[in-house]
Structures are given as structure tokens and as C-alpha cells.
Image: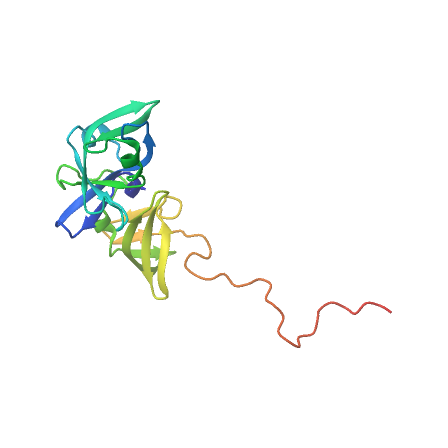
Length: 209
């Protein structure tokens, strides 16, 4: 779905919308280079020398609350590798592994394309299955493997993989997200073979003597 490539994440810290554009995956060489997983179809625009990224890292990371400036993006065997200002050795590079890169978004210049939505457009939408509302979108979580819609239901929160097979359509005008979840995602599946209650007669016939 669009969130995987060009979704935004609404952040109240700077009152700006931000765009998730990449993730740092592995140190490359000894001089601070880092391999990248790109979440944008336009790396030539997003990853230019001087581009500054906000970092999504754990609170105990030495990079928490800091930004990262790109010095150069190179390609090795068709894989993007970033060189960043101040990251000069492998130790520094390894301290940034799994960091997610965000940039400030210009809503007018960066309007989403087809099947792409900003997170703040999805939050609050009604989630409908088989024509029946089952909850509302509380937030969107961006994980390395995939994005998740966190759906608030009457029984609690449900994590819905934001993939076409499970979320076939999003209608912003109607305020509806349609889901076709597998059995058990929104409800418990009853046990087909319940344990017999104490004292219950066995269905098996007694063996002949």
C-alpha cells in the first residue's frame, strides 16, 4: 500500500508533517558508509548532498533527538549506500543501524499519488468489514517488515497489516477503510475440539473382553 513507500507520519513536535524516506540497514566498509533501504520512488530528489534527516531511533540511542546530514549517496551493485556528515568510521555507522530517516514534507509539492496516503488522512477513518463497521483507525505504525493499521474496536486494539490483500480499498471521501481480514484477526476462533469436561462420558466404546 501507499504507506510503505510514501506515507507520512504526523508529528506534533514541530507542527510539520514528515515523510519517511529510508532506513539504515548495514555498515558498509570502514569509513562510515551505511547501506540504505529506500521508502521513496524519488531518491534523486530526497537523497541529495546536504539533505537533513530526522532520526527515528530508540530513546536510549546516542542519536535520539538528533539529525543526520547526507554528504553523498552512492550505488554499489545496484544498492544505495549513504555517506553522512560526522559518521566517519564503522563504529559510528553501526550505532545508526535500523534508524529510520524522515524529512519535513511540503504538502503542496509532495501530494500523494494513487494508493498513497498520509498517516493523518487515515487516522480516524471507519474500518468496515462485510459492510459492517468494526472500529476506527487509531494510528499507523511503520515497522521494518511492513506497515500496520492500529484499529480501535469495542474489544480493544487490532493490528491490521496494511497490505492490498487485507486492506483492498481506502475511501477518504467516504471516510472508510475496507478490510478483508483472515479469520481470527478481529475475533477469537472457537476451538473445534474442546477438551471434555470432567465426568463427561467417553465417546469411545469399551473394548471387548
